[in-house]
Image (tube, rainbow, N blue to C red; front, side, top):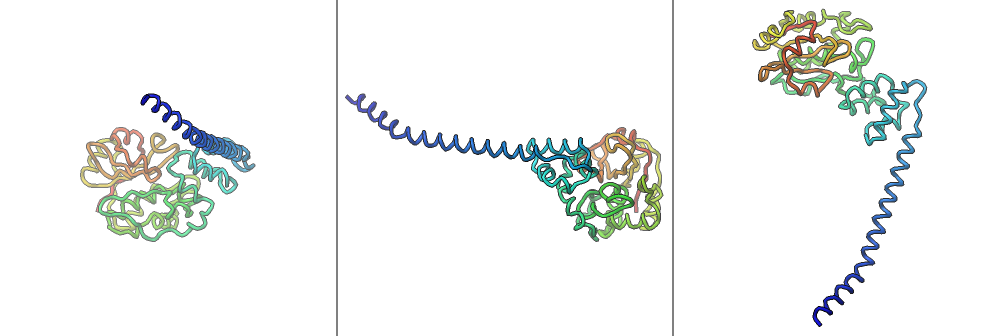
Length: 283
């Protein structure tokens, strides 16, 4: 008898709960269908965007594909694609870490005035990025600073630390280079800038031999090095980086064009094999 009563209670409970389950399942199904509908409409909206005539088709398609794959930043760009140039899209696609900087490209005129002081800790050689919004959209030479400003950014890292002076910004050094005709149109910053700027700011500088042993010796003595790089791990054309010190027998690199490369420690031989010129700085 008791067993029959329990079966009756279970049947009643199931009958009571069944409508609830059906309602929940219906709601879930409706939400899923609605979500799928909006997702499809979203894809169709992105897919319907066509490449402007003045943009490179391949660059456009890469950004569009990234947007379709769920990149919020690329979606914002593709929906406002007429506000972007080939140069800035290529710059982004080389390194997704640049997304926040690139998203400000349509408002670049708001960033024409460079910061006059660094906001960094000068107890160690600071890391500065040439595509920082504080100066990246200013003009240096025949392009934007984010494209051409590696040398002034390198010396700003070094001089601000050695002099303990936060006013020695990348833009101040770029201004010095331009005033002294040390920027070569179509080429970049003249190597003479690396010595003339040091003389101007009262910092000791010396050219050292391009070798692993020279790098190790200078860094062991507490000197800070600017290295002119050939195509390889750091550049496709030419580039300046800072060798800020040694750690566990490897080189601490401050690459003004790549925070991610600057987070790694580099083998001495890797650096020296891709270097065409070295300048060591000290007080």
